Image (tube, rainbow, N blue to C red; front, side, top):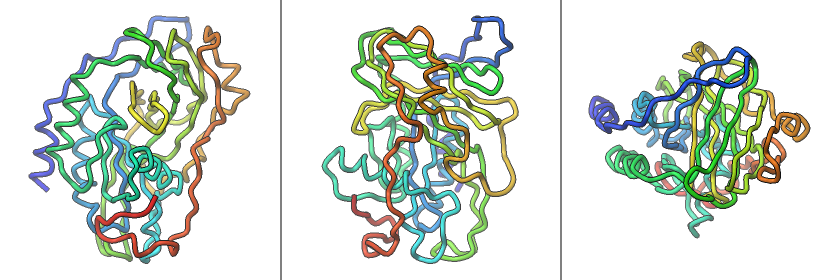
Length: 308
């Protein structure tokens, strides 16, 4: 464990700090900060996952990284149903595999900014890929500002048109502790970091010009907005808005999808100065996967591949 934490703390990651919102007259929280998105596909039922979960918890303390823990559901068949597992996250992992022509998925797996795929727990490689992305130029920028129970999203392309991009909004719980009673990890108590509880597809941006969008975001959970190439492919830009009240919350989180969604109607009313650059989509439009743990149990082993 000490080695895992040391590897995370040694990443030496840095970005410019956030600026202060100075628009309109409504009371506002400070603006967001950009970061490199690291997605962890994990499961409470995977015996190879706890070391990666521990590294991820240390990574979550890096201010220039936006870690998102996505619990898949294909391990549930072995005797312990992941309390955070969701078929949509399994489908997202499968989509990443299909995008590169792969027929295998793994837990644990980390994907850095939609590009670099790292199977297993390899903190050094993850740190290298994060540094690569910190050094890369960005073709777009996202800024988030909280106004009451809503979040204002500002997207622009300061460098050059980035091409058509999906606009995604994510909510997560900073920490959740689970006592696992059955399955491969029976008897372990694991504290998970940045557990994703809600994922909304807000629409599509042309990649040129700029737009402003206001969406409902009640509660204290952090808000992440990312711009991603179709595929899913590269995450071109991302920003996170923390709440000063966000922190460790007791008990089991709300099921994914409970948080208020930006429906096509309320997304449209929040759109300002967008012109034709942004096309609102159906909230939560991520393709749903089927929860059929008995369909391919031979594909699930410790760190073993599943089948997209």
